[in-house]
Amino acid sequence: MKNSKIKGIALDESLKRLVWHEFKPKCGENTALVPIKYSALNHRDVWISKGKYPGIKPFITLGSDGLVEQEGHRKVINPGLHWGNNENFQSSRFEVLGMPSHGTFAEAIEIEQSKLHDTPRHLSDEEAAALPLAGVTAYRCLLKRCQLKPKEKVLITGIGGGVASMALQYAIAMDADVIVTSGSLEKIDMALKLGAKAGYNYREEDWHNALISDFGGVDVVIDSAGGEGFANLVSIVNPGGRIGFYGGGLGNWTFVNPQKLFWRQISILGSTMGSDQDFREMLDFVSLHNIRPVVDQVFNISDYDEAFRYMSSAAQFGKIVFNNLG
Ligand SMILES: NC(=O)c1ccc[n+]([C@@H]2O[C@H](COP(=O)([O-])OP(=O)(O)OC[C@H]3O[C@@H](n4cnc5c(N)ncnc54)[C@H](OP(=O)(O)O)[C@@H]3O)[C@@H](O)[C@H]2O)c1
Image (tube, rainbow, N blue to C red; front, side):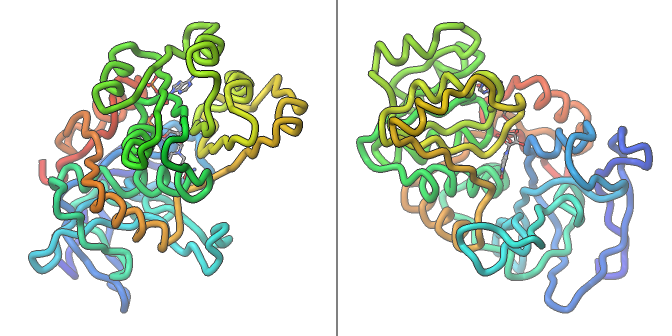
């Protein structure tokens, strides 16, 4: 494989169209060149395909999540590169696998050996491929930044999302009471089956007041939507509570009342992916609690256009996986 070219999925020179392309691995000193069995989509890949991400370049293989097999061992890839030495925040060199460096939507990947980790044994290949990016993002946001404690009440918004569905399972493993929101009643039902206590449709104008009247508020909120609806999250959180957020797909927060934040001693905690230590701890946590990422659907990688459209439409509950051999 060393001298041969690798096929992968990238944006063409127009930066608007996904195409198969071929590239040669660099074969660096501390890197391994390994075939990829399964990979998984993250919303980041969709943002990139729509031109809504900084530093987009053509002919860079997309994809951050992957399961590889190396000398008979199943390994997952830690997609966070160059975090640096400070556990509190990433270095200026931090990047995510799959832009600007070649990612996992390919036949094979050249990756630093230190980024390959033994796969939790209870996971299927597809579940393992679905775990890395969503798993570490949910872990850091919920457990490191927001420090969720047993018996606390936590609201997780947009529960159909890949990260949100991981956060749901972590919170249940922590013996917290989990409440969710979704734009789909079917997804709320799925969350209830996974152990959530209640769910509200964020498309209904007064959903936050219904939550307050049913539960009196929550101790922790986990969100990635942002936008106007963020103000509702501020009203829901109890005094001394924490709001962790790792995205802002719906844009700027508006109408957020500062008095509601300072008077009630509320912390707003931004979070992005996680350090190498977070990644190792996440794998241990997932093994300890037998947590399985929810895989919504497995596409053959040759059907990548369909898979990207599916994620754009937010039809999924959990993760969308590619069979890289298909
Ligand atoms: N900072 C980081 O390190 C990091 C890491 C991962 C992801 N992210 C960001 O986090 C976001 C989610 O990523 P993902 O990969 O989990 O995406 P995903 O699997 O595509 O999930 C997106 C979810 O957003 C939810 N949503 C849509 N409108 C909403 C609203 N008004 N209120 C609440 N939720 C709403 C939907 O939930 P329902 O289907 O239930 O309605 C949808 O399933 C993206 O913006 C992504 O870029 C950031």
